[in-house]
Amino acid sequence: MSDNLTPEPKDPSPTGHTRTPADEPGWERAALERIALAAITEQRAARRWKIFFRFLFLVILLLAVWAAISFSGDRVAITGRHTAMIALDGEISADTNANAEDINAALQSAFDDSGTAGVILRCNSPGGSPVQAGIIYNEIRRLRAKYPAIPLYVVVGDMCASGGYYAAAAADKIFVDKASIVGSIGVLMDSFGFTGLMDKLGIQRRLHTSGENKAFFDPFSPETAKMDEHAQVILDQIHAQFIDAVRQGRGKRLHETPDMFSGLFWTGQKSVELGLADGFGDPDYVARDLFKAPDIVDYTVKESITDRVARKFGAAVGNGAVHAMALGAKLNLR
Image (cartoon, rainbow, N blue to C red):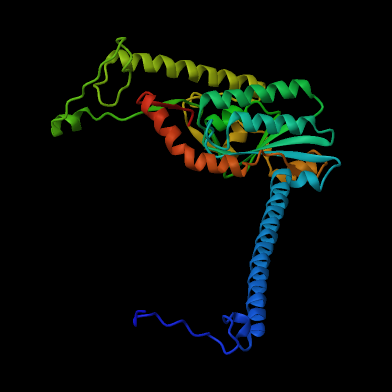
């Protein structure tokens, strides 16, 4: 028998069995502490999620209330006889708040309301797109013919010029402040030419077109007499349309002078003398004393949050694409 026998292991415990956690003193307390700690951790996580969802619900609720107040405006508070008001503020353009689609939608809503005693178009605009101004002008005349019992008066703030006056001329009456700026019945097309600068810098313009007039008013190419003549024809045609609209809208009240359609503008006081406006007054005066409906309800289309975000983030891309494809000149009533 060999002397190198491995000795048998001794029992780890006097009783002869393997020790377990249950054999350790105080194991029950340690287990309970671990269970309690796990329960507390789970409760804290559940509490955090509960707080988060409550906060999220509160934010959604506040946004809903804000949207209801912002977009419905005074219509929630006033349901009886009232004066409807629409704001025409800023440059008239398809990509601004003063666009024909929103203005006309607000006008339609105002005339459709059975409680509307009269409509005020509050104008504070230097002008803008002749197309947008013409669309508003035509819609005002259509609504006046459809609802002859509901008067539409324009009330001018600081300015009602060019395209702003184009739209305003369709109203039943125009009221101004003595210091308002009114008129500027004319058309302009503005652009820049960089050919001289390019020559000094040694830059050569390489432009390929199909159609001899495709590069009309390209700011990096020399202007020709043909371009200038053609542009003047366009300006004269639109100017004639503008003049016809003013004459049709103002009728015999207009006291024409040689300068009336030259692009000049006047104070509100002078505009009344010329027949470009009918009198002096603000929205409260018109609503209270003329319409006999002192409660004013704002029907102006409010920009939604989605539209605002889309305009902020998409305007640069959209405008860049439009400007890249557009002519070098921009046509405006202002």
